[in-house]
Each structure stands twice: as structure tokens, then as C-alpha cells.
Image 1 (tube, rainbow, N blue to C red):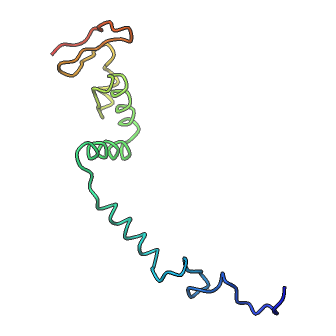
Image 2: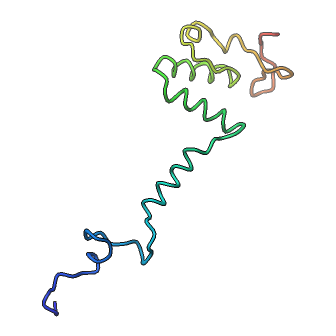
Image 3: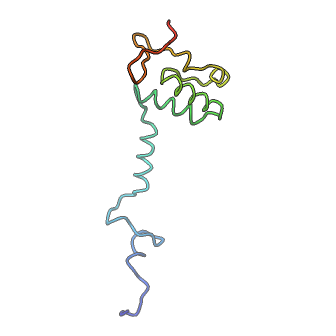
Length: 119
């Protein structure tokens, strides 16, 4: 290389401590990023999103039995039941004791009505 190698390079210029600046901006991008994260944490979901967030939080913080209960009850009931009580869910067969939402009925893929518990 030409120039004698004075030690100054573009990667060492900019912020003190040798860290290069992002572009030529005077903004502290770390501060901007932390402000955005703070705003997102404070933002509260509403309606369906709030309910979804609640279920996610319950599942995330739950023990293994609660997670198993939530999975089994929701999947075997066709999405009509979500229980966190494993003792109740383990003993109950939601496929045999179907209960459709009011005004609806269970049918198989061929369109035949399936047996269900009536209100």
C-alpha cells in the first residue's frame, strides 16, 4: 500500500472508541431503537387480538400439564373448548361428548350429522 500507513482508516473514524457511525447522521440509533421497543411494550391490543394475547400468555407461562390440557381440549373438541385443567381434560372424551355452539351442528366431511350433546 502507498501512504506509509498512518493508522487512520474509515472504519476507525466517527464515534469515539473506534465504533463507526451509522451514515453521517447525528442521531443516536440505539436510543431510537430502545424508544420504539418501549412504545411497542406499552401498546395494548384490543378485541380479538387482546384475547389471543391472553391465551398466548397463559400457554407460555403454564406448566406441562396445563399445556397438555389446552392442546387436547382445543383439538379434540373441534375448537369449542379450551381448558387448563388436566385432570378434567384427561378423563373427558370431547370427541364422544361433542357440543356445538348454539345454532350449529356437527357434521363429518360427507355432510352427515354427527351425534352431539344437546343443551
